[in-house]
Image (cartoon, rainbow over all chains, first blue to last red; front, top):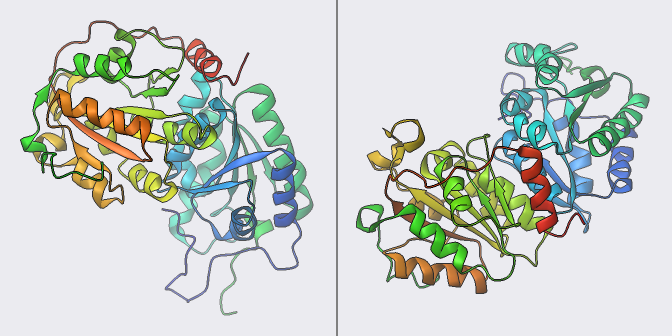
Length: 189
Length: 204
């Protein structure tokens, strides 16, 4: 389980995009434009607004997973059944998926992942750093094409490229949305 | 399977049946291009051994994922019945998937658990199911009320017929033997996927 929950250390929630940020709503519009029908996820605060938008959409099915590797399987089944999907997760969840990416690689199934980063910029929680620091390396070691978005204006174009690359070239792809975009957690505020 | 009083109440009371025979009985009842996801190991070897169908998907790896693959297919094609054939060791690896299925409530999904209490393909080492973990009890406790052990072959066929005609999701528990499979599935993953998509009408 990703720890995108209240932190008992100081009672604050993990970083969610500011209400003024436009990219979560634009990301939802992007998913609609690609006719994404199954949205598989383990929740993360960074994706909270996008998740709410997807849940409110009649044409989308939000599948809340118990662990991220279920999502690799679910999207494989969805695509073979004729529907497109995306997997939303926090960087810690990437570690849970690594072996299961073999499914997408050997069967050549599209596997777009939108990953909100922890442990890469101003992280407060030591437990997030090892996996956050390794996320891109381990994804690439398992044949995933990875692009980063570290500015708000880069999120949607990068996610667009990631989704296109997955469905046009039949492979796992990922956009890592940097902690700098999400807002590094600050103490005492 | 709302009427479960005729089913055995626990794994211990279910008859140990022949895995290959049960698989043939299942496949013989599929008349409407139902999809079947065969989990890794002997589960999918026997599915292939029962006669290749274009609506079969054979897993070569990714242990434990037959149920979520089947869920993705079932949500994408609500008019088609979808079966997941999964071994006990595999399902033990992804028990959370039962909760995910219970949350989504796909009416067209049936999970068939093939339980011999062991990791047969690697030499028959005991699994937790062989030491008392009851996967049907776990399925029920996960929110899948229509979960039951098959008392014998006749009961299994009746349960499959219900899964083909009534609203699921269903989970059918089968205690099985540890026989060697008659055939092995050809390991060509691109072809497995392509055949399956054509069998589901997604590709022409």
